[in-house]
Image 1 (cartoon, rainbow, N blue to C red):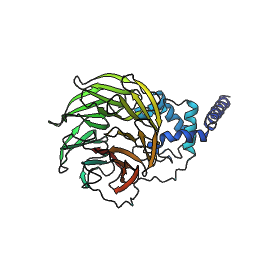
Image 2: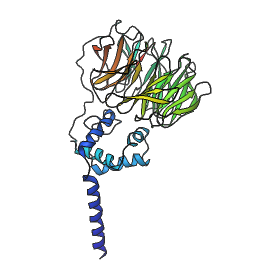
Image 3: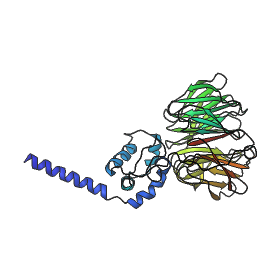
Image 4: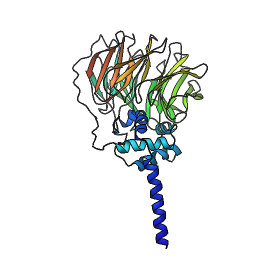
Length: 414
């Protein structure tokens, strides 16, 4: 009797699971998956080792993981933001879509570049530094010299005087500091967990490192090359931007809360500005008058945020996945990248109209030259740097670099 009851209960449970599993809409899941392409690829294959392959995974397993991120049973600030807007039906659709994909799909991990162009002083009038995630190097332009760094060189920055270059290594919880003249390693500084963005104060005295894994910002003294303070912020700090006078720092909180505002004198967080309409604030830049923040999210949006009122004036759709964003020094345009796509979006700052420019596969790092004539783009999947003429809005050159070029630092455009 007990055995019959057990078999009956098991049959009912399986029937309930089947109804939950197979009621999903794969087409809807595919539409939702566009938001996931920045990490897990358009085909369900992770763009790098840190992002798991989802293609061909069992639907029930994927649904379970999504629910765990939603409930907080699994902790990850990025995934928390990604699932915040999903109900159970949406998660089921997404799980069904990835389950339907073939595991035999091969990732385009280190595509051999066909680029033959060389960098020149014309397109690189100021020093430019590109971090190479998979090569564990930083490349200096226009010389095209590679400096040996640490594992997973991610975000980088150059000091205002051009004497030092910094690059974060999230897998080792450190920031590497180089002599910009010769690439010599000056220091390897231990910071918080999973450091992402690094920015230097306008006076060149300190660097702020956003530690996404420990929900804080490390302050490094660039004279002593040591951490002198740690600022607690919200979940998932990713990158920062200082005001010109250096009094404030705005930090993106990829966990979803918005933008943290830091007082650099007291080294305290003053407040958090919510940014509704986007998913996981990722990178940001400021207008020339510093009244507007352009916030790139982790999916395919740029929020135009009025910093005085705290209101979002507009949400602009750009390419899929996360990416960098940069307001040109002349305040004429905003350039946004999209690692899950093959184009960048250039936004006119006057009317907020958008022009998309095909540049190559996996654009992430993006920065304008100091004179605003050129837009540099790191193509993570092509192992190239594209140089876009900002006047004609066309690609002028493609330059072969190391493996997985990630971020771009330009002297004169912090």
